[in-house]
Amino acid sequence: MELKICHLFPDILNLYGDRGNVVCMQKRLNWRSIDVSVTGVSIGTPLKAADYDLFFIGGGQDFEQEVLLSDLKGEKTAEIKAAIEDGKTFLAICGGYQMLGAYYKTWDGQQCDFIGALDLYTIGHKDRMIGNYMFTCDELGGQSVVGFENHSGKTYLGSGLRPIGRVLSGYGNNGEDGMEGARYKNVFCTYSHGCLLPKNPVLADHILKTALERKYGSVDLAPLDDGVELAAHSYMERRLKST
Ligand code: GLN
Image (cartoon, rainbow, N blue to C red):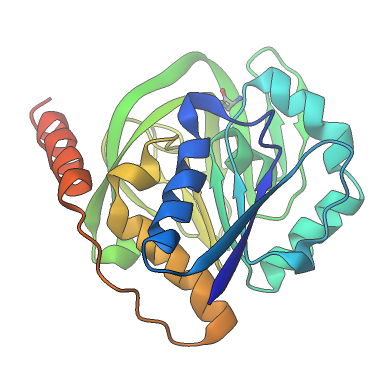
């Protein structure tokens, strides 16, 4: 088996070690002797979405998001939308998550029209939502996911989307409706940055399995020794429960 990962804008959208999520997926596939390739596609490089199985988009400040806008429009938007509708797997973090939605109005009034692949929009606020946080993941039997968020944007989901889960501690999508992230077909969006997959190996495998099963049908992933990862998860879970 082989998984082809496309890392979109790796040189521009990479806050708080977001690239670590790609390394984590690569390693978990390597350890199971599943072939994996990672290809970066950034400004000026055409995106041929049909060449890939899984797409990763990290986070970026408002500035970086504005820098990307003209490149994202047109051909890349059409390729991303088609890949999403075709059931390709996406993991999009924070700024990358916002960019899959309709628009982002920054706290100082700049309107960024994004690609509109998902029915969601984001409004910036002067007070940022920062810190370690924790949420449930509905499709993992409600088990907790721990992560780190830092955003000024408050994201609101339209009726066609469901969240990844419910906020247990922290802010999540907007600090108001208790929702975290977005799910649509095989798209996973979250505000949680670089430590997401390393600290939540069950979620990492769920995303990898989603991509592999679209390609190969039913797939069983061999178990790995996740002792260290699960200890990190439990430590943070205990810390957040006590606050
Ligand atoms: N620019 C966005 C915000 O502040 C995203 C930030 C990020 O990716 N951390 O809301």
